[in-house]
Image (cartoon, rainbow, N blue to C red; front, side, top):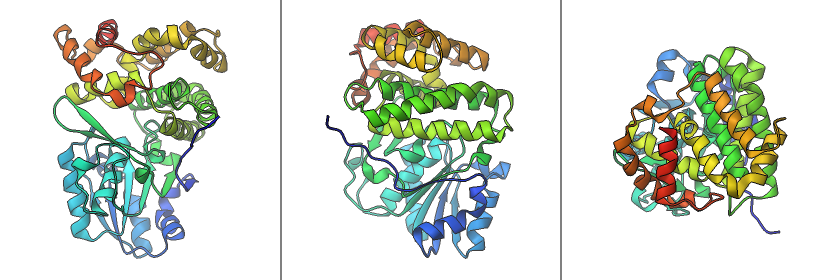
Length: 378
């Protein structure tokens, strides 16, 4: 047996930890003068960031807040943010928010810490320069971005590209479940299913599946499956929110080492073209891709089903994901998010370009197979 497992060097799990973010950062990084905070306007307007900023300022840190992050951030947004961070003279970058804010913060730290252009960072292990110190604080239980080495960038109206490098692992991840309380049911469901997909695809990853990622995926899936419907029905239950956040983090650690496959490859064009939130995109194509994969991954899907207390069959696992989507009342068909029959061929073409993910899929996927999966999900 031979494999390598990488993860974040420091993870702090603390309810209300964001209220003493300044102290935590000082404990980890020492003296900090100028901090560049990456978030989004919605979190600012809701006041979710207020206590974190107050904590930073209470220990003498000068804070520059960048709140122009939007879902599926474009290269232009990332370049603008990194230029602002450089002009500000940041000595630490903090990403506080969902996956888009954290992905942006990762690349801001890399771009503001060196002279390497972003065009040379796209792909796997292409970051060569230094980066600024980096801390990430998630406000959703889904992407796991706080413990991955990956950042996704929207290049144009129909395509996304990834930057994958150990340099993008943050120095610190802070998990504060109180920041996820009040997240709307639809967003809770979509991000939770996203995290479950991370666990399933890590467990069935063709190339880098390993015993550590397997155990993390199993633990994550159990926690997420057992709490997602409760989180949607009672968004104020802190114990449930903590379980969801911890499960999403474990799933992130799993797929950071055993990368995801065709579910994500087919989901990315939906986000780029139709601006469907990433978690919902995954959920929409999940049943059709799992059905396609079943002939090659039946034993593994059956193991996952049994782990969740279901009948030990791939069909039971697929049916359970369909049931969860119905129970949480999120969209279940592509037609519900604006996709038409005439869009499917282009979607399949775009999905086939995401080779870095397709190579991890347990069953080789062709253009015709991708098209059939989209057709089944329509």
